[in-house]
Image 1 (cartoon, one colour):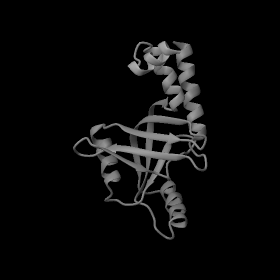
Image 2 (cartoon, rainbow, N blue to C red):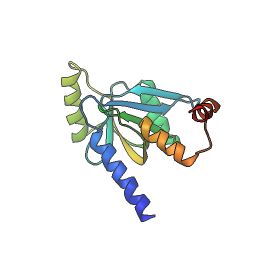
Image 3 (cartoon, rainbow, N blue to C red):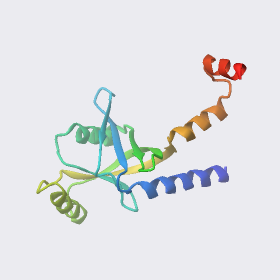
Length: 163
């Protein structure tokens, strides 16, 4: 069990160390009022050293409404991080807080104005990490083949037999 915990912690640290990489692609997926996924590329997602954060520009956006619903009704959120070297990580998170005033908000607001030519933000969302899983294709294929060696498509069996 300790070995598994330390592997999980190492994976978490590895993924978080890639979170702010220049060129990383980050997709935030929330659920709408009908439970349908709503994925958006979110360039403002970053690891602050303490929590994952993102800016929300519009108070009325679908994402902002979904994040609010997530807090109210304990709905899940997923963040997909694809690092520049194509390593991929899926974070399961919970929206934990929306900062709309104070020093942290003011700092983010001013940074957003600089980044978006004068446009501010509606809030700074913070997320509590529940788990992280590596989703890099080669890693996932290896995990699935090890866990389910008999799940193989018939054409793959025919290739093995003919060689």
